[in-house]
Image (cartoon, rainbow, N blue to C red; front, side, top):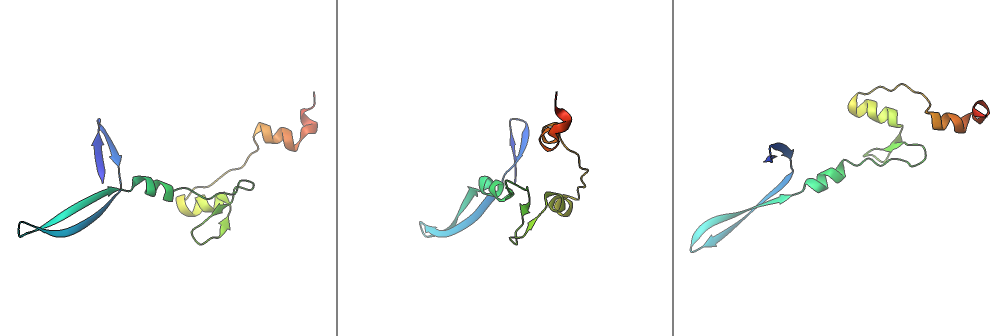
Length: 96
């Protein structure tokens, strides 16, 4: 569902349930809207290895970050080494 708030459109997720009941001999239905947006956000969190950065998919299989992104978002990567890692990997080239 989209919610308009202060000129911005926010996407929210609602769990909709109904409960029939009688009130003064009239059949009515109670409509319950429960905001589950936070739960849906948690579903989007990726389990990632703190060391090698592999991603655990829904089938409990670990795959490289690059493979995961390629499969789910059709992204390709080019690789390089950042300056910090270059200094750690090749300290002899950075001696003063």
